[in-house]
Image (cartoon, rainbow, N blue to C red):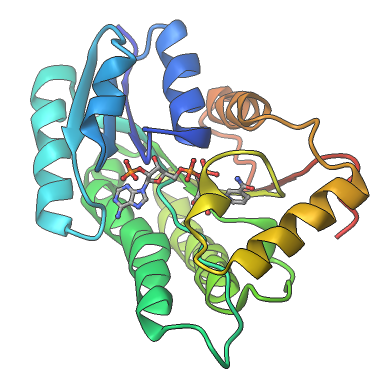
Length: 240
Ligand code: NDP
């Protein structure tokens, strides 16, 4: 059997597509999200589904160790869970900032710390962190979201440097706008409308979560000695 792949935020969007595509190719999986029923609904073989909030490190670590008992050590973790609560800095509720920093940044740090010691010892393994184009360039109304994603980019590069001597890969994926549930959690209707107007004016819409998942799987399946450090992937019509 292939080696264990852990995917956070596997209940929708990119995570769900990643789960399907890795499963189709025979990888044993640990799927994590809060809506565990959506993970179970996929009914994938050789798959453990756990209700985990990635901000709870103990819960997260217990789930990983449980899966490792069954399938062996984690060879790939995809730190994908994230939230995008758009808002301007002047007016946004600081609880929304906190949630984004906790999930998008602390969740990724938790995931990395849970697996990196073992990977270092085994001199192998891959960590893939889902950042965003909003982690390499700023967008209006994306203040705390950009802060979280710039954070993921910076921290992934530092982790890459820490793990390079041990033959462990750290990659960051920076997608542009892709249709998923991501925008639906933004609480400002005006901001949501503007975002959708921008998408329709530019014609963004061809790219799918499946395209992003396929690209991530391709990067992982390159030889261990090859590290695609950063991938920016966006709709061809995305002008920003
Ligand atoms: P979705 O909203 O469809 O998926 C987000 C996933 O994260 C869900 O499975 C959700 O599961 C999970 N999640 C959210 N909070 C938590 C938490 N506290 N603990 C565990 N899981 C959590 O969005 P996408 O698929 O689009 O997003 C995936 C990643 O890609 C995110 O990091 C996002 O920032 C990034 N991204 C997305 C882009 C896009 O345009 N779609 C562009 C650039 C980056 P549940 O609610 O069940 O816990």
